Length: 229
Image 1 (tube, rainbow, N blue to C red):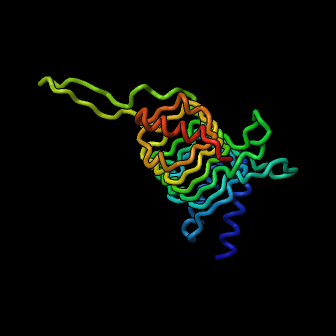
Image 2 (image 1 turned 90 degrees about the vertical axis):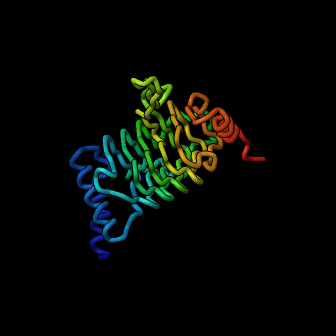
Image 3 (image 1 turned 180 degrees about the horizontal axis):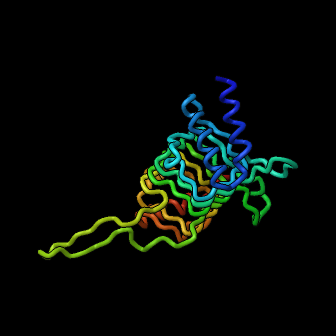
């Protein structure tokens, strides 16, 4: 069993920096085999993934995994992470470390992203105790003004249904850390337990969408608080 686990981890290590459909297939197969062996914690430092869905690849749980590991300036084994159009929908991401910190956060204006998540989705994702500290999370298009469609029935009554879903729709954000994150075009509508998430020093939230002005004000207050006091 130990040898099998080591082999699957080696496959992930060999292919995680190659953003190609073949690499995605090999990585997904290795993760599924590890899951069957009871292993969910993965070393994905340096991953390059685009147009990839964990759930559609048969992966239900990556709890305790690490994407960016916080290191920088390596001579070998670049650990920076680029995730584009990656779906974490319906996946168990308890205690996943997307990023533990931005190692350059104390140097003022930061132009380098050690981990960037572009157009990623977390619909119904279990993000309890997950850590995004220092991540750049952005979406290419601004969120729609409304997620609902309204119409009038033949009898004159009004009907409506939800036709769009934000990237954090029904995601559980209890104790999720967004400390120092930089957001662009973020949409937190329908996220669960959002007021239990940590947004200290996060930026780009002024234009983000929330379920209410009260929730938005509370999140902005968290982002603005001085953690040194």
